[in-house]
Structure formats: C-alpha cells, structure tokens
Image (cartoon, rainbow, N blue to C red; front, side, top):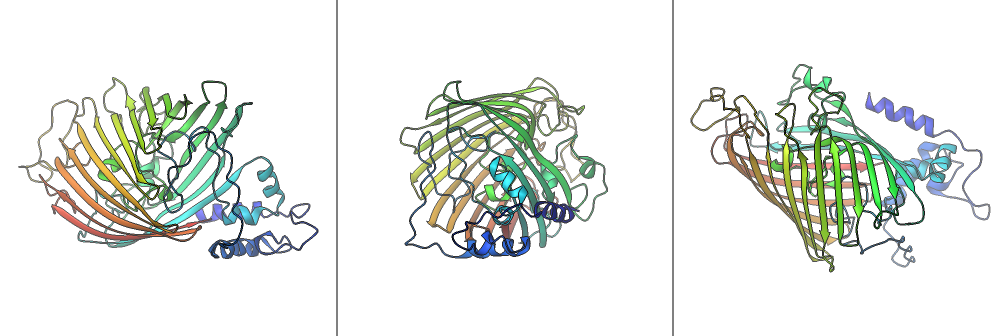
Length: 482
C-alpha cells in the first residue's frame, strides 16, 4: 500500500512544467536536463550524488546563521547541532538540508517550481535491516529489531515540510511538517487514537509484538509560527510532535546507532499539543508546553492534560550542553502510557571530531495495577499483583562518538537501566547494554550501519521471552534517501 502511495505521488509530481529551468546559454545535463523524463532525471541525481567532490571546486558560501557555529559535522554525524526537541532547527540556524534526488528530479516540473518558490520540501528514505541473534524467539527489549535472525523492513518514510526562516528578525514566518511512516517500526511509534487499531485490535502476526506485522503511522503533523520579536525569537509548534528529550529519535537517519537503548525503548515517543521554544540568547533557550499525555491523542479517552518544560544551556566555548526536561507531568493515574518523566542530558565536545552525550532519567506511573511478566523468585506468569504505586524506573546511557573522516563515524553506547517493578519492560530486573556501531556514508544518499551489541539482565532472565539472562546481537541496516 505504501509503495502505491509513492508511485501515485511520483506520477503527480512528474507533470511537465510550462518551461525548463535550464539556462539558454548552456545545455543542461544530468538531473537538470529537462528534456529527459522524470525517471531519467531521478537516476541521474543518484549518479551525481555518488560522484566524489571536486577538491578544486570553490566552496559554496555558508548560509547566514544567527548564533554559534555548528559544533559537529553532518555528515558523518546524524546532526550538526546540540540537541533541542520540538523544533526542526534551533532558532537562528538556517535550513541546511541536502537536496535529495526526488527534489532534483522534480525541479523541471510545475510542481517542483511551485515548491521551490514556496520553500516546500519533499523527501524521505527507505530502511531495511538484518540481524543475527543468540535468542530464537524475541530480541526484546532490544528495539526496534525485536524479531531475531531476520531481514526486516523497518521504515519507509515520506516527509513534506516547510521550515520557518528563524535567521531573519524582521517579519513573522510560518512552517509545517508532515511525516508518514510505514514499516515494522510502527509497533513503537503508534499513538493511541491515531490509526492505533492496526496495533491494538489486530491478531498477533508472526511477531513478538502485538498487532499487524507491518503498519502505517502518520507520525508527525504540526504547524509552526515564528515570532522574531519575543526575546531573540520564539517558535510556537502545534500538533503531533516528537517527545522533546532523548538523544535518540524514532527516525533511522537521526540516530548514532541502528538499535535503541532500553531507556529510549520504554519512554515517551510522541505528544499532541502545543509547545513554545524561545531563544533568550546564544547560550539559553527555554521551552514550555501542554499536551494530551504521552502517546495518546488529545481526543482519545486515555488522554490526560500534561505539562512539559525544558531549558537548554550551551557554554560560551560551544563545548558543553545541558538540557534538563520535564517531559510529562500530571496528577492522573496510569492510562495507556501516562508517564511522569524527568530527563537530564549532558553533551561534551572533546574536539570537533569527538564528542559524547549522556542522558539520565527517572520515570514512573501513578497507581498502576497488575503484574509484570517476570519477577525474581516467581515462575513466568505467576508473579503477584503489585499494590497501587508509582512503579518507578530509572536509567542512564552514554554515547561516545568519533568522526573518522567525512564519510565514517563510530559510536559506542553503554547503558544501565533499572526497571524496579517491571512496569516498563515487563521484567523486574536491572539491565546493562553495550553497543558499538559504524556509520559509513557510501554517498550523501546511502548510509550503511553495521553494529554489535551485548546486553545482560541481572535479576531475572528477561531475554528470549524470559528464558535467557544475556543476549548477543549483530545487525546491519541501510538507509537509502530519496
């Protein structure tokens, strides 16, 4: 079904333009040759992006920005800015997205002309993976590759967006963002009340997780209003957006590694609500918002009005970042995923090529009844019911990231997690996980990520559906941008 959507979009966007973009002075070639068909231009764009850069070519002028320089290189890192959730770019940072092949191929069409004129972008990626595991039934709580010894279709994502220009300070600007995800990863991203029937009310289909094997999730949809006259700029975001803390993200290209930490696997994913992001100066940014509770649409019966707030501080040297967040807080009982979550992230840059990120959090739910799947001293499925309480969990994860060259980076992740009563993972145990992975950019359109991971549960055999205390997994994925 998702492939049919892409085909229909391509046919629509390939309508011929009234005139070509090429100059009359010189014949256009490659993806700019408007005498060629859409498919030929798309193939030419991939070939162009695969060519090595000309070392003698003059460097393109850097776009204007209002603030400190970018602390990192992207690529090979997944981002060039210090973490800030709730916005596509920090205020004052220009849109530096690469022009991917789809947009290049569209440039000769009337739709492509209209998009360029209105600063609207359309692009996405396709992301398959494969893993070999010491487990045979389930890799969980490893995510997202929960099915062991498989080739999996993780993500096909289509993005349409317009980023507000937050570098300028003389007029209001607006933007919007829409992401539609199809693949196995919908098991983790689905929000209650938004196409959630395919996950919650569908028979298990050859997976350790409930729901259809592959599903669709319109993951992100929000509008932005940028107001330059509040402090050094305020952006108001309204709709469904990613949970604002976390080093990691749901989207494959935005992660240092293929797999996710246990800490990330079991915390909040998306919110529906409104959040403001205000730049006080180059070092301080504050955020305040209200939403309908974690992973519940505000119109769903499981929704609970919640507040959130964050402060981001960046040192004058640009070598350190602190980002404390109250991701979600209310005084209501547990519903679908009504978390109370408190997060702190610290980033430190040793050099332009080496940095680390450390995240710690405490989460709990109010008055959760029931028994987890595994408790020390009890057979699987025979644990006692816990009394109503907070059912807390806490964790800490560290990423150590090294740029080897402009096309390669290594990331090492070490983590400790304590699910005290098993409410988050299903097993009341302490965990540790240790992961090393490489990201290799074949071209700006294709990245390959091999990874090796070892993890251990200390108090209960939480792996392979409660049969093993440890797990070793080797994985690899590919991300093809279009």
